[in-house]
Amino acid sequence: MTKLRWGILGTGHIAGIFSRGVAASRTGQLVAVGSRTQESADRFAREFGLARAHGSYEALLGDPEVSAVYVATPHPLHLEWTVRAAKAGKHVLCEKPLAVNRGGAVTMIEMARACGVMLMEAYMYRCHPQTAKVVELVKSGALGRIGLIQATFSFCNDFNPDARLWNKTLGGGGILDVGGYPVSLARLVAGAADGKAFADPVSVVGAGCLDPRTAVDVYAAALLRFANDVVAQVTCGIGLLQDNSVRIYGSKGWLHVPEPWVTTREGGTATIYLHRPGAAVPEEIRITAPPLYALEADAFAAALAADLREVPQMTAADTLGNMAVLDQWRAAIGLSYDADKT
Image (cartoon, rainbow, N blue to C red):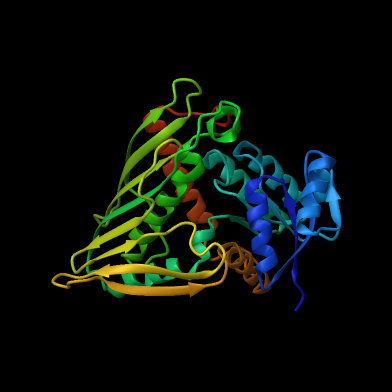
């Protein structure tokens, strides 16, 4: 089997995590890295055993050995380097959020289509069999009629005005960094309740706390209402500890997903809990899977091998619907970025 040859664009923390995933995948091969400096590229190449280290992103995109690029830059640079990668004929897996706003995402998706390359927003949890099991349970009617979804992704990071998470110029804040996870899960489940791939809410009401020093969102919450009367409470944060789990409530029972996002990062078994009326203890449903980011790399490669135009686990339409909700959520709390002005 010919393996998909990956180039890593960026050398930050998430670039290393995905690189380890590719190394553990069935279908991928790491061949090159590109950084803004040769020193950083060399360091990354030594760590991951790469023979090709480029001291610029342009050089990586010009490497004929690279077939697919993983874009791991800060959020505001996703648009530029995804577009440039597409023009260079490279397939692109871009870190989430795909862009700072929906308009930027549209530009990226249209360019990928025009250049005949595949583009996926890197919501890795969508490629895990645990997520597929949640959808299966909702569609099967095991929970009855779905009414309420609660989903959270939040952590507490020390304040640093120069760090990406707290820097508005770098697209900092909780909604862009992790808010898309609970939104995407809520849209996935609301759609599954009607037998669809996803659903878009008919209303979004948001609230949040902006840091007085850098004006990024420290924590935020939103209430999403869907046409089928499903309601979702989604929360996120970069400066607040919360319960990072998902609860889905139905007329016949409710489902608890304790680790919905970074599930079996190194491979292993995850457990979700199905609560039924009258049962003394919940039913435990165990899902064993390979490393999380290996699953993402394999899903991307499988779609290419099947000559698909997009990855089924995270389609372009799904991404655009998610970005639209994030735009509305940010607008509700008065959070904007420079990209919103263009």
